[in-house]
Image (cartoon, rainbow, N blue to C red):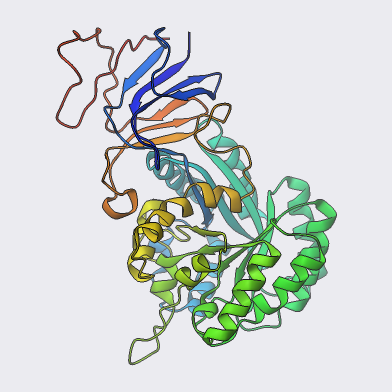
Amino acid sequence: MPDLILRGATLPGRAGRVDLVIENGRLVSVGPAAPSSRGRDEFQLDGRLALPGLVDVHHHLDKAYALPDTGVPGDLPSAIASMGDYQARVSREEMLRRGLRLLDQAVSFGVSTLRTHVNVGGAYGLRGLEVALELRQRGRGRIGVQVVAMASAGVLPDQTDWGMMEEATRLGCDALGGSIGVRTDPAPLLDGLFGLATHRSLPLDLHVDEHVEPRCPGLEQLIPRTTAAGYQGRVIAGHCCGLGVVGADERRRLIAGLVQAGIAVAVLPLTNLFLQGRDQEVPGARGIAPVRALLRQGALVACASDNVQDPYLPYGNGDPLLAALVLGVAGHLTSAAERDALVDMVTVDAAAAAGMADYGLGPGRPADLVVLDARPPDHPAASLPARWLVVHGGRVVAAPAAPRWATPDPPESQGPMRGGLATVVNRKRR
């Protein structure tokens, strides 16, 4: 007997309805009609749209919901200073509590994998990383958490602090990161990060050119180093705001370099729209990567939430579809293909950027998915539909809209319930 059957789902880009059969945490079949045998749990989706679990590749769990203690300084340097002061005095318990709150939110939105960047070194020490690793453990069974150890500003001159980055790899971080191309020469940090990453065989996920100046020193150095290290497909460049400000010819050249080096770009519209371009009397560059140009040249693009109610961004709730909607508006994504790409940026393309090879709604894949309270022609990134059901590892982990009680089999003539709910068929208590 299958553990779970979801009947009558609509999948992106696929005509008609399908049944999803789940057993031992994996999808065993995806087809027009499941076998006549019943599952231990069954849900009638009545044509609702099912997506693979959302993937949010750029967060900061150690900073989440810090706003009451930091205020909103208003620009990036001031936010960095405010956060440094906050993390020097915030208790481990409070950081953990706020991180758990964000994970709970992410689960309710259908996020199956969340990647968090955590400052290491300086005033931050290893405390934020240790909290993130505990959050990763506490999330097991509900959400996957990937932890990026992010070298703090000034970490390299202090060999003790650089030793903390090495310790982060021993503690079990999933990737290495840092910020390049804002004010300082990126070369020393890139030397250290590539050296440690290749030694430990860890991917890199970097904050790159987070400004609205017409220059991209971070990308100029990251692209050739990635190729030289044989790290194609193992690097994410987050932000890349400067790429939207440089001249058209330089932009095309840099994007071609990203594609050739296999570097994915994480576009972070919420935080960058809030922070960048604030000092211009006449609004101009707003600080998001040139997503249309990236898509046109074939770059791998993810869209992510970044900050949630902290000194960098007083808004946000951890819903990647909200970030995708904002990106669609701010990035002028117009055609049907561009709008559909927004969904890919928080599902299949984000998963590819994060190195998740075993992902998607296909037989044999992990049963991580979200059912939206939407049906074609509704668009997930346009209407922000409610999350009807969330499944992780083959288990229902959130059912904010689906009924949670056992019901008898409905008469054939009765059909599914209406009014925003579906019939749960043969829901047996374990």
